[in-house]
Image 1: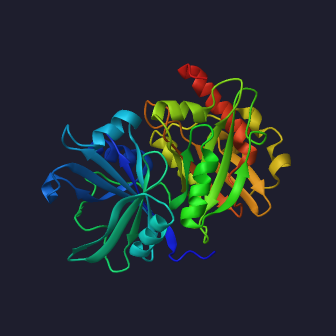
Image 2: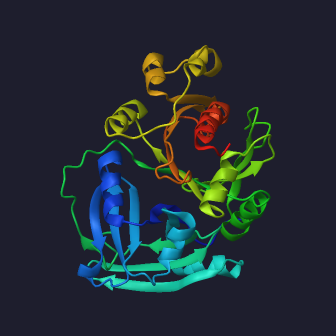
Amino acid sequence: MTTPFQLLGFDHVRFIVGNAKQAAHYYQSIFGFEQVAYEGLETGSRDQVTYVMKQNDIYFLLTSPLHAQSELNEHIRLHGDGVQDVAYTVDDAKKAWEVTTSRGATSIREPQVIEDENGSIVMASIKSYGDVIHTFVERKNYKGFLPGYKKSNSTAKVNPTGLNFIDHIVGNQPDGDMEKIVSWYEKIFDFHRFWTADDKDISTEFTSLRSIVVASENHKVKMPINEPAEGIKKSQIQEFVEFYSGAGVQHIAFATDDIITTVKKLRENGLDCLPTPKTYYENLEERVGKIDEDMEVISDLGILIDRDEQGYLLQIFTRPIQDRPTLFFEIIQRKGAESFGKGNFKALFQSIEREQARRGTL
């Protein structure tokens, strides 16, 4: 079935955070994002403040409430700092809203035309899983980011780290909800099942999970959906659900063309990544075949490698970026591979389990 509108890719991701100014400094100093726009009291926004952070094709919106009575405070109370909106660029926002709501999606915001001196944008929003929404952004008649935002530059020197675009965004669900959410994306967006893994693929001695990746027809949008599977101990997915108070975005994967250079820069900036045991690299070339990169450098940096029929990929995962063990990031470089590192999941899970044991939540 051909969808009556086209998803052109991820437009932006909005985070609700306790202190947007400090969060903006974190994403600039650690990840190399540049502040490009601002919305707050100075621009006429009386209820919330937002810093727009950009690196190549990645846009993060960091939003904080300005008053105690703001409904955004409930999002922070329940989830801590977390993703509220995964926005898509579309060719026709009105059509996207009409089609998705006619198929059963709950409307959050009806189509609205917003104008300023840079042109006009059409936006509309629907509810997704948990407290996550999807905003449709039609920007073909607009130059700039969004109306209502003032251009703003970072005051300190910005050092980009080579993050190019969002490869995928992962959503964790309570046990038993994965199929329901996957079916929702199939019904509402005509997404197809792109890749799957069950508890036989992704398990250790103690924990396991199930995962299905849904993707748009053009593969510009890929959304892995996870749920915990039964194990001897509590999985990282169940840990997330408990600390996040339900379903939510677990991690965002950044694509890079040179993961070695990117990871070196990120580590120099102070980014804390999950450690990979040296045993992982024993006979690794026999498991994944020849790679272009220096295996010693890969090992020193703790980068994981996996191969599928199309090629191989390199990836690394950060520790949670806040005290709640919830949101984290992935850095990924694809060299032909279209999968999601199934061969690395056991090593990744074992690393996460060691972190869970330190936290007393395994």
